[in-house]
Length: 204
Image (cartoon, rainbow, N blue to C red; front, side, top):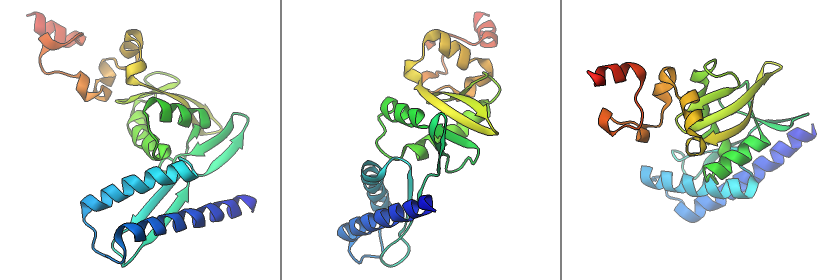
């Protein structure tokens, strides 16, 4: 019951905050361009995450006259590992506080970390089973463990921090599609390393 009250109190606070920001920015103007919508959402998401936490999903409906908002702080549960934050789009995925903090630091993300984590996790889940205890996406590697039918994400290491050995381990031939695009080239002579079967073709 206390959790429900806390959720409602936080929701009302955030809605009031965003409504004031909306009125200051647009007044009674009901027609807002896509460019201005993006700019406003970037600004308000940054401010909301700084003031109320990095676990809030805030949606603004620009089609209504004035303003309508749906605010959903991420669900949290207390465990022996500390507080776990549930993913917005992957019901069985939970992020530790440590994971959220590391992700924020290592990606220099001040906005809603859970939203960004979820977008990376959508790619990372496709690598399940390739490396036990780790999931790979173009941005980096997640360390996880399974517990009570929950996938608990313990930390995140961005691609730039990985050693050559770790890159070889996590981004092998079967995971080449998850390799960051800026590190790929169409010209074999410009590459630092070449996948086995490609090397055979190149050597001919």
